[in-house]
Image (cartoon, rainbow, N blue to C red):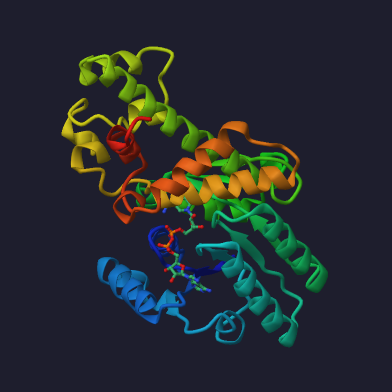
Length: 327
Ligand code: NAD
């Protein structure tokens, strides 16, 4: 049977994810897209249809959230949101629910939220959907892999589901269009986000420790390239010390490490800070103090006061710590 999809939020991540859905459409499937910035919707449609005109008639640009209910051929199976924060997810889903309530039908739609947001808001939205439209669902499906993973359709999805058997074949098909891995993280709503925030907390803290460790090696007058190679095969090995090594010139240019390009691109410090703040806030709410998280949070907030650090890859913290005055 054919499937109809909706995608809301065509930013750095969403434009690639929606493009992969478009490129995977079967002949009778349809994809409806929308971004609050009309130019983003327009550019998205122009770009994907010029690259692949064969499914052009199956892609529809919408100009409001309620259009996902009133301007579609048949009720959508899935609507994915990829927007910045909890307040945006809440606003969009509340608008969708209102529109569906005004146009009742026996069909059901599943809302998938792949944004990284706070767990309490996600639970609130889930409860609102289940109360307003009991046959509908709202699942947190945050992603890991960054813009590069979104571009290559190699994202990992973290889901509030107990096992793979609890993920429907239709949902699996959709997620496999955009990613490579599906991780069921637990049956309670918010489990996907809990896994995402726990992982990104670890990234934020290790990144800071890696920056400190390399500055220590520098203070001891070690050759940093050699030290980086040693860490890569020693117990200090971590994503932040190897795959995203902050020392320029350690690995060949084909690895495209931000350190070799002035720390441009990559996973920017501002987003790392956003996820760390979400993780520490959610931990406080769950009576689980993140001891290192609380300290690291202060450092990330301080770094993000400078736009040149906030908008560059998180490995730039190595350089920043080196420039800070020692007391
Ligand atoms: P982005 O700011 O580039 O894109 C967000 C898009 O949502 C923008 O185009 C914006 O116009 C649109 N938008 C905002 N409010 C909207 C609304 N009410 N209705 C419709 N569209 C709306 O952000 P991004 O980097 O694509 O990230 C999106 C989400 O994914 C965030 O929660 C982020 O934390 C998370 N995330 C980002 C990355 C990354 O590497 N960029 C990786 C994993 C997860």
